[in-house]
Image (cartoon, rainbow over all chains, first blue to last red; front, top):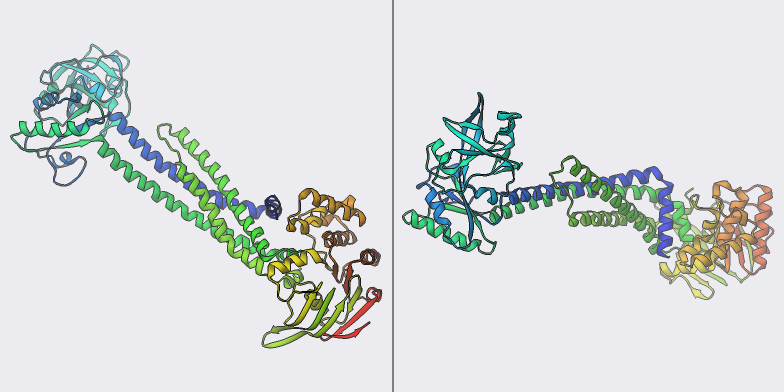
Length: 402
Length: 222
């Protein structure tokens, strides 16, 4: 038999039972589409998180006060107590490490912000002029914090979009005096950037020089120090030097935790990849269900077409050829279903991307190829039994079956 | 040349053994025209199936063109059936989803013959049977006589040496029966052996050699 003839014959059989074929194709299609869409969501989540981290800054080394005994990403945030504070002087000292490009100390707290009687509670971020570059933020008007020493408290601030809208409305905030707690600050710029980082909405922020924020909260300690290395290669050296310098400055105690973005990133990457695989596995179960449906349909097909099978045998078809014909039918069902499923899945992904443009939903190639091949494999596996049953039919009984 | 010697065919039905064929000795020379008659259950269809290689005898030897067929594998049997034997059935056994021509091409499709040659051979045979103008019709658009002619075309398109017809006119009116028998006899005159199983004496008595079966045995041969 020629391949084309097998396809023609199989197609003629499938198109005769249109409804049955369509239902079967839908079952297979849903299975494949489920894999494509679910892995796309998992993969999208992974890429989303990675993108979020990328906006945090590149080549970052983050110094957190406190040394944790167990491994974890943000220990001191939860533990709270630290033996020695991280100070502005510590931050300045880190600037002397070769290979460090920028250092941005950070203080975070919350305070009441008001302008002409309009008041709101807002997160206050104390930092330095370097933060703008470290975080890859954009200004929409005015300019960012002035170039000063970390210790110099200047009464100026930069505000995010939400603060600007809610406090100033249509008034241009640049040049206005804003009250933070019981101190007055002049607004020198507004941020254009959106999005969240370390759990804070950038648009909600009021950013002041680090010394000013320390004065507002009346605490000299830093929340953390962001150190930007000149390149990825020098990160290990910078970590080592940072540890040494802090240790030296803290009477020989290594009381800080140093994490790199890479470490966090790879952890998230691993977790979300595992999640994607798990979801793909769950979706693959629906393909097994579709496979059993194929088997069921093929068994019905064999029993309905006993006369045809008898005839084929009388016309000189060997058992082998009949197996091929029926396997081709099951495989054709499976692969057509898989093809439709890939299309449906990709269209769904496109719709998801259209509705949530920031969420990069896209099925990885392995998922699409895997789903299609599992579909065809189930067609073969679950088609094998009915095909063998067809081939073993007694031709005389089959022909008498009318 | 068909040579049957001491052929037995037994079926187990429940706990009973049914002897469908008992000690059949039969030789059919090329080009012979033979009818097999007898009451229902006399074993005539079983004999036809054994000759047509659809059924294996329980005992005895069967030589087709001096080849011992009881020793052949399933694949070899299928190929022998494909090349040497043409079947014609009471209910035509055309595939309803295929056109007349596609039905005629089916044995050639199974044999893997080139589509161009296939179409040519099918059309030649159909033309000789006067059904070429119905080539693109489906079986349900054809009369019974036409359907049987399509089936005859299908049975002969591989140029077999033997045609086995099981009640070929059993489902046709008198006029169509006459046509179909005439066609079969014409094919016989062209050299194909023709074996017809029938209930109908008016058909059976036309054969040059008539066999009567009763209870799995050949009762009368001549």
